[in-house]
Amino acid sequence: MSPSFGVFHPVPLLGNYQQTALWLVLGVIYFLWIAPGIVRWPRWILMLLAAAQLGGLAILQVRAMYVGIGVIILVLFLFGETRKLIGFASTIGWGAGALLALLLTVSALGIQLQGRMGPVTFAFVEEQAKTVFAVGDANTRMAHDVDRADWYGEVWDRVRSSPTNLLVGEGFGQALIDYVNEDGIAVRQPHNSSLTVLARLGFVGLSIWLLFLALVLVRYVRFLRMQSAPEGTRVTILWLFLCLLLYLLTASVQPTLEFSHGSMPFYFLLGLGIGIMGQREYSFDSQPFRVRAPRTVNA
Image 1 (cartoon, rainbow, N blue to C red):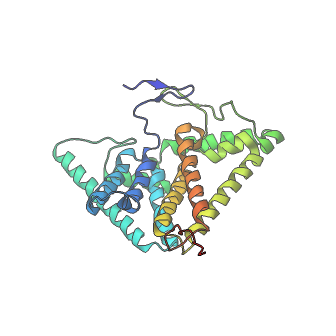
Image 2: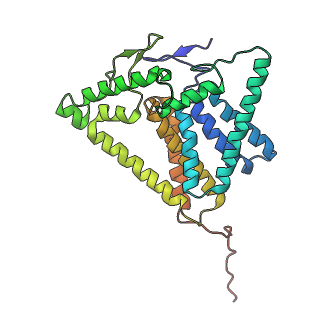
């Protein structure tokens, strides 16, 4: 019902859910770690909201965010964030319980919920998650997996078609793959933002892009390992660090950074984290800042 606009890919002004799964997962840990310091809501309400967002993944059915949950757990484990890890794990349990209650309710009412890729059932989510690790029934593999393999092959053939393409890429403008989806819309990108960088800018551009990401990641890790960081600042940076990781995870299977609705939030949050670290990295002080009164000179 919403009016749509766009050159190559018409996008509805209202109801565009391209990044919803990503923001649901990021919203879970935001409610758990940052919201308690902003609003004075009861803890159980924040936990319930976090669990509801986690349960929403069963409807959106985005496999990258199943992996994203594992990434969050791994990062918390590596940084020794035991309390946050336990809280996140308990929220997963709450989310599963809320989803089970919802499924039992709609089943009793004779309602069948339809998700983005299939029915909203634990069995479908389990089979979908197995395809991430190439286990389970081979017949349940997603058609997009086959499409992506073809797209990656097409892009690699373009990259190595000439020394110029290999070194500096073919530039912008031309579609990188030859594919039209079921809605008749031409798909121009190979659903991997770094591979797009390689095709557009060659190994020179890809090297700069990867160096940029490496420097940013090292900066985050060094900051989070500092023991003198205030807890509020540390929690915010930890959340922004996970934003970066989950964004890069999404960009490895989607053309996330090729479109404004993906790239603008990514670079905004990235710049926000760098700004906070730049201001706080060398100015940690357990004592609050006080303005000294001017000294008086006795005659």
